[in-house]
Length: 115
Length: 113
Image 1 (tube, one colour):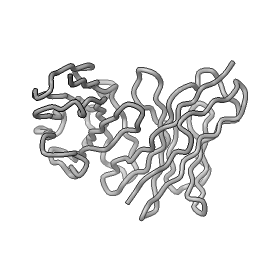
Image 2 (cartoon, rainbow over the protein chains, first blue to last red):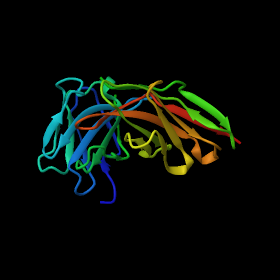
Image 3 (cartoon, rainbow over the protein chains, first blue to last red):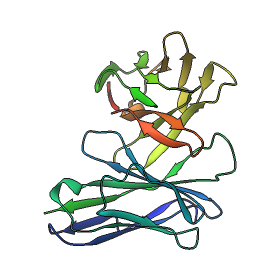
Image 4 (spheres, rainbow over the protein chains, first blue to last red):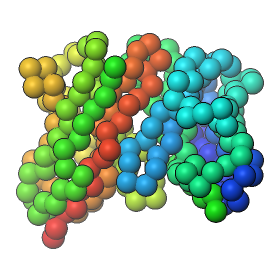
């Protein structure tokens, strides 16, 4: 596609439920990033993929959060036993992964609301 | 460790006035610095980036930023504000080798007609 796409655009769930958020990066981009943006804050790094592997998952807040990228393209962020504090906009970004300093292209985000 | 601090969560300027948005960084290695803009209900868009090639960096929409190592700053400026510049602006530093970003808390720019 022309840009990074994320689905769904909005997700409302109840406390304790499981959710999956999807990211389709720009075609050919090998690097993929997940960020979380809480209200009034800047995006917070969660996890970074280079190809299929998670190169850095140090930003994941706890073991309820998990992300996969099985074929090196689409990625899914999975949140188990959601809590109200997980409510935020989840952003995905991709970059070519081929240059030392790479622009990241961001998707529009998924707004997650946990009731 | 890499981090950025944006001073001033809200900045208001008159249309045609100078825009100055402040960003200070902390980095254990030579930093790569970025400014992104977020318009209402839109995704983050790159304004400009510092890659050590030149200390004065020009970006889109008339914005520029100057890297000052002695002050650990990378402030964003524009000589004359337009109404269309009203948005949220984020400064970010990247962490090698993966280049994941660490963002500041953002500055909301309001342009007064």
